[in-house]
Amino acid sequence: MNQNGNASTNSINPINPIHQSRPAETKKPEPKTFSTINAAALMAQEFEPLQFAVDKILPHGLFILAGSGKIGKSWLALEMCTAVSSGGKLWDFAAAQGEVLYLALEDTHARLQARLKTMEAENEKNTRLHLGTASLGISTGMLEQTHNFLKEYPDTKLIIVDTLERIRDTDQDKSMYSCDYRDMTALREITNKHRLTLLLIHHTRKMYDPDPLNTLSGSTGLIGSVDGVFVLEKEKRIGNKAKLTIANRDTESFCFKLQFDPEKCKWLFVGNDAGAPDKDEPLCQSINGFLKDRWKGTATELCTELKAADESFDGMPADVSKRLKALEGFFKNEMGIGVEFVRTHQDKVITLTRNGDEAGETERE
Image 1: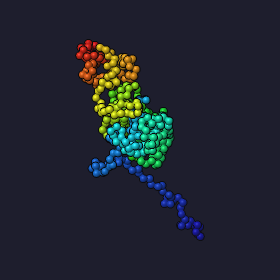
Image 2 (image 1 turned 90 degrees about the horizontal axis):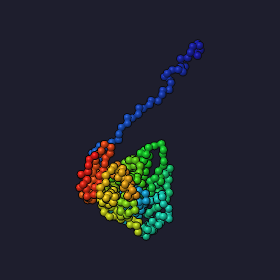
Image 3 (image 1 turned 180 degrees about the horizontal axis):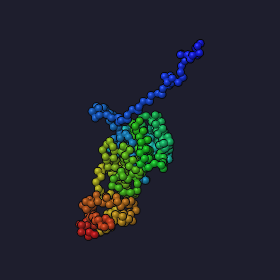
Image 4 (image 1 turned 135 degrees about the horizontal axis):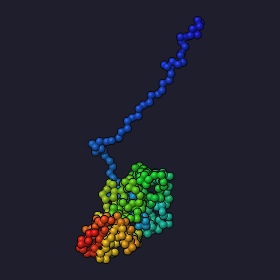
């Protein structure tokens, strides 16, 4: 108030909007789009060439070596380890020398010592091969353990985990595909940050499939998220002959014939196998041993009888039927066995005939 009792003109109106605080302006989010590069710019870039732990067949990246239980996967894995750590060869393929970490999670130190002695005496003086029999899980510390090892041994060229299942975590709330892809993505962190090869030992399912990659235990997410797959298959469970199929993303594919040397416990290279049918293929052997003159029935009945004749036979009806169809000409021309399929109202009937000219004369029901 002034001396005349009137309100002062200098007083500030507390509700004057000019003096109220204004809310901070919010920025509109940037529009989301893809990060791309045009073809011309891509072709102008220079990238380091693909590096290999084992020349031509095992490049740097994330890989799986699969096979049925007790087939000899660990022996092959140990051969790879000694080849790389010594700078030697795996068969005719040169290995890039470097430190190697072999996580033999189903073995003991005593067993590993015995295996190294059996394979080669000079392995006893190999200081570049590091062996461990325990590891944390993928989500509970295994990645940190690996990164710490690589800090101590930066020249590491190869890491093998034997087996993959030992470092995986069960998750009942997610699908098999989701778990497979999640675990492989996590392990890929290692190969993304370090120039090396990470090879996971894994199992196959107990069923026959003409495509070895389809036999891997797990979902398609497992195969789709790695850089390559090695599948080791024996012709006979108790035999020494085997086939190694190699399907890599960045190299050509291979199919090798191998033979296990029981004295030195090594897989010997026999030759290349382009996947052509062979009389030594398990299905061919089983049918050749089982068939007398003529047989007729469904694929399910055939599998039952083949299993009864040979306990090691583990083919499934759908797979056997598919493979028989693919090998129809081979059976006739190379084995003298006629193969015919006839669709009835209820089933598809298979007829097998020794010296197969008679197969075409079977009655069509």
